[in-house]
Image 1 (cartoon, chains in turn green, purple):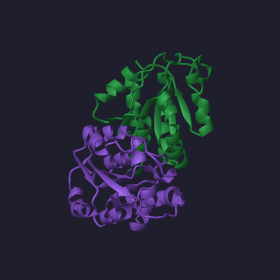
Image 2: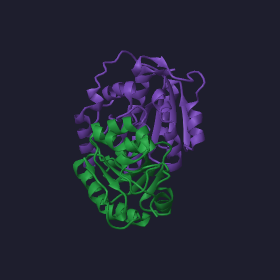
Image 3: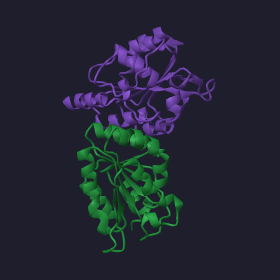
Image 4: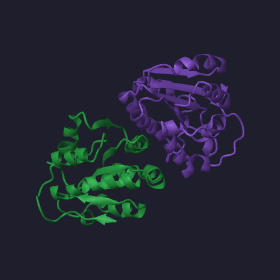
Length: 176
Length: 189
């Protein structure tokens, strides 16, 4: 299930590059609870854009429902959250995304993950458990650690909508 | 207090074939017998999420009225959605709560704050454009048509009691055939 991060190439992750990939993926709505990993480099510049439209929600499981409703109307959405919110929303993700097989696309900042360290090797319990939980739920995920990994974004989102299944993009360091 | 099924029958008389309706739990079992229709959106995946699904539908299909028939226990699980909906302010979203003070589908236990909670007050404070409360069926019947003509988001608190015994076959809400029928009906128009 895991698609590992690149260990070669540029050392940094660019927020502008992520936004270009999000737009290229046909995302019309970004639904978000702020995440400290992506706060400055991704969410703040996204908030200045008119497209995709940013919908600020109070709690992450709300976003799962909003993305589901949008999916039925043919609109693509991205849920931008922190892994704490992912963990808090497991029942909604279980019911809506997995059991109903809906294309809920999640971009998840890994709070306190050490840059360059694979999530499974993090010293942080809250980081190490994320991928095993996604494996247990049968949700595909991709590690995004540097710009070299950004080529995974569009195929992951296109694939989720084509086959109607959820996908998670794990952001492993703060985008610049 | 109004009987829920009487209330839903009055509402159904005002609902058109273009409207999308999202009823939850006990209300859903009454609703699908009163108004069987492929544009009933019945699969919410987790308790409390109906209003959020409704917001997504309202954004994606601004040409249709989206009518959420929430429960009071369900809404308590997702009170933040009131704030989100108030901020996004979709003009085509109509959010009803059937308030009977209990977790009816989970054994009839009382909700927290049963005697004090003010759902209409929550919605008003969250920024809904219009907020209504009904506890008299005749007044509801007289006014519901006008309520559904208002620009949303509109919140309606229905003070109800259950209508009677129900046969709760959850496959009628969560079965894949339900979602397939909805998807096809929405895509057709």
